[in-house]
Image (cartoon, rainbow, N blue to C red; front, top):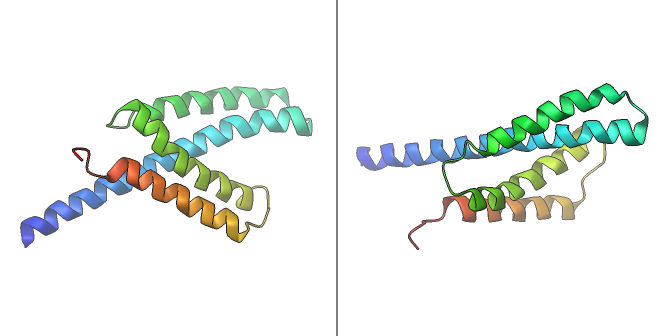
Length: 122
């Protein structure tokens, strides 16, 4: 039983690391897109494009850290991105999420989990 518990713990840690990496990646992408939005739509300083570019470069680098095929990473990342974007909408933009937003986010996370954590030999 001890060996099984160790393997399970390692698997859970791997999955948590993947989800954390996806979350940080999504934040980098959202910041990289939100700052130009502020410049274009809310007449903020053009200097916001500098941290935006750095944030998008960080986003691209973070995507390269995943230990699986790029196409699979991009597909699964989309699910986490949707959830982080909804949280951004709620926390940063102050928009109350609907029940459908929450259900859609959960479905997206389920899709991410299926893509990333299902047995690959199936």
